[in-house]
Amino acid sequence: MTLNPKFEHDKFLLHQKHFTIGEKYNIYDVNEQPLFYVEREKFKLYANIHIYGNDSKTEELLTIEDKSVFNMDATMNVKDPRTGEAVGSFKREMLSSLLRRTWKIMDSQGNVIGSAMEDSMGKALVRRFVPLGGLLMTDFIIEVNGSGVGKFDRKFTIGDKYVLDLSTDPQRLFDRRMAVALAILLDSAEAR
Image (tube, rainbow, N blue to C red; front, side, top):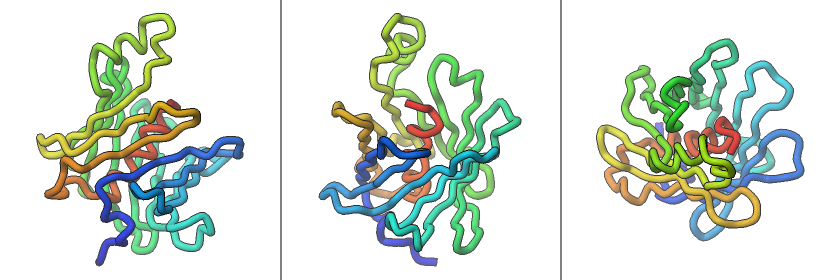
């Protein structure tokens, strides 16, 4: 199966839409050309996230299924809705995330291949235990197979805008479909 060319980028710009019911995002390339439209389901026990080719929602490219309602550890499965094929999954263990938010990245067979974690333990501790520390922006570093493959940073702007930068992964160790799904989770599931 050939990968949709929209996933062939090394940088993605995420803009969360405000003043809407539910969570919605637009994702752009570095030239601000639209790539994806993202919507999280509203008012459901399992709040799945749908990634579309555009805001007309005629072509769904990925589905992130939330399987964590009665589970202390958040588990999110990423699927290709056209084929039903599992792309991979993410899991956040509550205990290890108390001090430094960390998500495990797993392949389609459930094998841990990497992680996304807050950029520094020091900042993570300040965010949690210092008054007004929560005002510090939460950025993440991404590692796959022992290599740093990218980072997810909040831009210093009005509104929620983020940059997913995978330019340190020219070998493409990290499936770009999983990377886009991870970027949505790092904002949506972390309620940043």
